[in-house]
Image 1 (cartoon, rainbow, N blue to C red):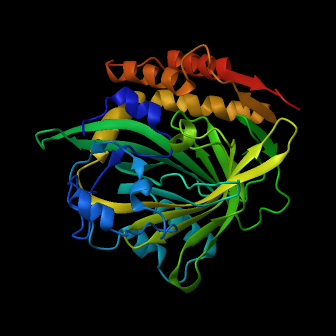
Image 2 (image 1 turned 90 degrees about the horizontal axis):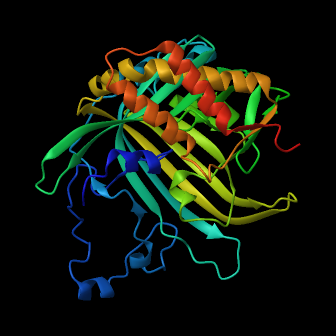
Length: 387
């Protein structure tokens, strides 16, 4: 398996990573793994949720590059210890739970479809990939917290040598206390304003794509009962994930409930999703259901923050201009659509090309960054495109 060029990394990444295989970059298999064709044919195997399905048909698809070695932290994180401090007000404990999602992690993404609603249904192959990810606190304003995810990845070449780091801005999550103004996903790249009736005691989580365009926004509440810290969302519609874009065309909305749980060595994001087809006449048809487990395990090496800081020092001003432009769009429009760029490069490609230029410059031009961000985003925007 060969390192993937950076443009391909950008093109295939949204809420996914791009590394496969053993999480230490090795090809070791369990002793029970069939070692030849005859033993493979005689093996019953076992696939989670599909115990009677031939395991050979359910080998996970996903990343195609060997990852470098990682060293997991063996002690609980300081963030987890602070979260469990006695006597905290719930609001402060909520905040500490959100802030505990920052750090350096081995992030893995594991999905399996558990059932289908169509005739002659056949389960698709599960999905698995992993990467090393730095999560930094962009903003912390008491009742608002913004966390930026960035992939900082190392690869093994054919000779087993480690190459990297390769840095790529990943997704972002913004948390707002008792949020009264959300933009939620409708369908077909359209988002609509939603003003919840009772956000008391809840936090909204707004998730953004690699280019800071919207993905989904949903309210939920933190529960710290019995030593747990778990945020559970309301039901939430969102666009297809990148892992499905090129392999599925039978649904256009992913509907699900999210659970985010802080654990001693990081955090875990569990998804219970249904795959929904909504046609132009608003007829609804469910086609399948899946479970996803995204696991963020704290690591002590390799160093991720240095490479992130080098990248962010050059490009952070531009990405702030992108975020500010989107904030203007949210304030101005109750409904907007992102056009499908059939005749030009996708939105993320235009943004990343500009950021790549900034990495090579000694000094940036803030005015040019703002102009480029606004012209790019509004060039893809269709406000009030469907009432």
